[in-house]
Each structure stands twice: as C-alpha cells, then as structure tokens.
Length: 464
Ligand SMILES: [Zn+2]
Image (cartoon, rainbow, N blue to C red):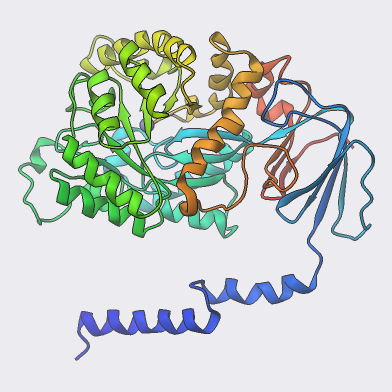
C-alpha cells in the first residue's frame, strides 16, 4: 500500500533528481532554454533622442540615446549608439520625450486590491487569483514595474508573472501578514474562536492572507514558513489598524520578544522585518526589537522621528486617499479610525522632512478597483510636501533602496529605480516632462507611451 509518506518521498526524490540533472532547482521546461538563448544575440532596443529623468536628480538630461540589451541598460550616450541591425533590434525615436525609471509602489497588496473584504473571506480561491492576475496586468500598464507586496498570498501570482504566463510587475513578496489574535490582519469572525493551538487553520490562514501567532515560537514558525516560500521581507502588524475589525488604533500588539523572534529569523535569512504601526509606542517597540522599516507611521511624534533618524529606520508612508474612509459607513468605528490616521499625515510628513528620514512611498490601495486606477494620481498628491522631482525620486530610486534591503533574498538581482548603465531595464517613455508637470503620471493610459519591464516592451502607443 502506498502511504502518504511514500508518495511524498517519491515526489521529493523526483525533484532531487531533476535538480541534480540541471544543477539548479528549476522546472525542466525552463532549464532547457538557456542553451538556445546562448547561441542567439540578446535582443536590443535603442531609445533615440530622449531626455532622461534618471530617478536620482531634479534635472532632465540633454537629448540622449539609451541602448537596452537583454534585460539591462547597456549604454547611455549623448551621441548616436551604433547597433547591429538584427531583426530583433528595435529602434525607437523618442522625439525629445522623457525616459524615466518604471515606478515602484512600496506598499502594495496584489491579492487584496480588487475584491471587497467579504469576497476575500468567502469567494472561490481560483476566482480571487484571476482577479489578482487581471489587476497585476493593469498595475504594470499604469507604469508600475515593481511592487513591494506587504501582505497576501502572492507567491503563485509572482511565479506566473516571472514565468511570462501573464503580464505584471516585479513582486517583492512578504507572503502572509503575521498578526496576533485580534490584531490588524485578523479578520476572523468570533465563531472561529477559541483557536486551538495546533488545531485546524482558518480561512484567512489557509489562503495565506494572514497568519496568527501568539508567542515568539509561533512567530518564528510563521516567519520561516514565509521565507521558505520565497518572501523577500517579512511583514508583521505591530499596532492596531483602520480596516481591521478587532484592533483599536491605539493598541500595541506583538510583545518585544515576539518582534525580536521575527527579526532574528528574518536576519538569519539575510533580510528584514517591516511592521505596520501608527503610534509612537508601537513604532518605538518595533525599533527596539530590530525592525528596519515602519509602514504608515501617521501618528508618530517628535521623539519617535528622532529615534528613527538615529537608527536609520525607513518610513514607508502615504497620504491616504479620502475615498478610503468612504469604504466604511460614515460615523462607524472604522470610519473614525480613518479620520484619526488621516489627520496625522501632515505632521508625519513634516517630521519625515525635518529629521531627513529615509522615506519610501506606497499606496496601500485595498479592496477597490476604482482606487487602483488612481495609483499614479496618489503619487502626484505628494507634491503637498515635495517638489515633483522629489516625489518621483521617492517612487523610483528611494523605493528601490528600500527594496535592496532584501539583499540576496531579492528575487531580481540588479539595480532598480534608476536609468543608468548596468541597471535593470524598467523604463517609461513619457509624453511630456513629469518634473514640470507631475500630473502626467496620473493619466498613464494617455501619457506613458512605452512601458518596458526587464527589457521587454509591454506597451507601445508611440505615434509612428
Ligand atoms: Zn497595507
């Protein structure tokens, strides 16, 4: 009789065999292709006559030429770049338009953008995956070539995008959000209580949306499970949240020992922990435990900002769209929590500037395809505190610097968020100058004429 153990053992042996044949742990179909690729020259694209916003400074370059070969920017030159006129070479006359790095959203939830909460908790998993796939393509076509996913079951979606099954952004996945019982990200109904330790998992856990952990040991298990699946960073919720049904805004959730257990497990794996936290208490406790990045931080105070500056802690923040509060009934507890957080935004940005905090930007769009279409418009909202060039630097190079904290756990080795020789070729050709008019990024369908990711053109509406 074949026991489950022997079936698993046989599968494992088959995989091991496949791994030893090809030297790397890759599916056979993919492993076969490098031989063919080695014999052919890498496809090249030349952008001629473009003015470059390189993601670093506030000026556009003089009219330039950019050669992309394979998935990298090979050469940037003020003079024409000679290339072989192979059939695979694409010449693009930029007509003096702007070439800039693909945008990066540092706080995204690829699986949670489109479905309403109720649907997430009850709908068929296949349906939810297809929704997320469609949204991933829409995300890329808004010019977002990379997202840092801070919670949700995105490993399959990421794999499908990376294999070319569907178009979508690069995904830096966190896997499941890790929360405490009743914390932000615990959407269980009371009927699921009490939780039996070691008992069956609930819906939010089996889908990989969020995992409940109530001790350092449980935290370690949950963190390691995400790392095993390919998480590039780990996300915990250190304090209460707006959308969560059970956690008041003012509460701190994980103990310092629990946070420290997560940090230790992540650092052993060469990466870092980021936490959702609004209040000074939650932020300070996280920093004491070794957390490297704070998501949101809208309710921070002067001493918190000072501490973040001293420790070099990242602040990943956003001006939330007013529509987000409308997702909840006016006057409800969640609506009130939203008002409280929104009111802190201006103070937090003021402190971020005053203390020169390492600041990243991400939208945190949830449960709303309507809001998702405003992803670029939300970036333009940063001009309340920053110049258009500063806002664009934040959504490109700065966000890429945050991504680089994943070290060897980055799924995409190479430089992102900049236009420079050797960097990965994620590029947008913009019809106009976004430094002079940042509103251009709010209407990507009209103004982003070319969208390239990893050297491949996904959109080209340049007039011929
Ligand atoms: Zn979030």
